[in-house]
Image (cartoon, rainbow, N blue to C red; front, side):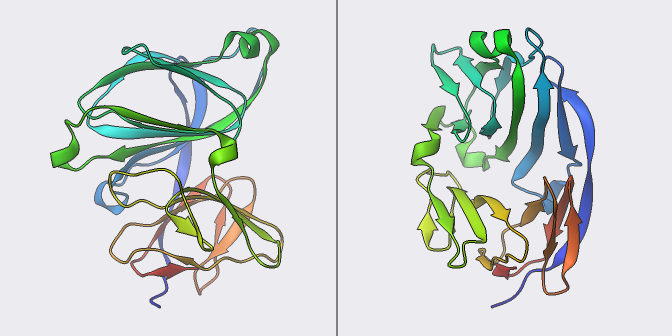
Length: 233
């Protein structure tokens, strides 16, 4: 195995997105992060009753948006009449293709009660020959998202896309992608295989971790860009 290490650590910047909700976003680095155009950690923010803000109608074209919700709820609606409610643990993998206009807003009950909103959205670029494909949605509830646990019980992996610890995702991706939500208890470790030649990123939130044989630390709100190789620890 050719072990990956950290090539660069990228800090995040706090900014407002959509109708004015806070996100943490690492700087875009072009080919170093291709095909990932954007990674946003949405919140966490504790909205007061009546205060929750979402993203009113806006267009997408030529890429995919992947939303993974950890806390709160989001009502999705689009120009084709599709709608759906996301709750904690749900994933929406939307391939915009030749074009979609959609909104992502707090549903009426969450807007009325308030509460904590926390999740992630990434944008995945499509190759030139796929940019005008028909739009499609993969709305997968939390109960259908596979999870894997290490033998010692210290590592849990939510397998959004790709494979980890012998467990494969249910989501079909246009291009090869591994997307994992990894939770590590103190003393835990994970050896993860990755396809050689594809860019690798590690985003840390809610703690700190060590990556690679050099045990370089990645702290809360930092993103590590990995060197090439077929395995990372």
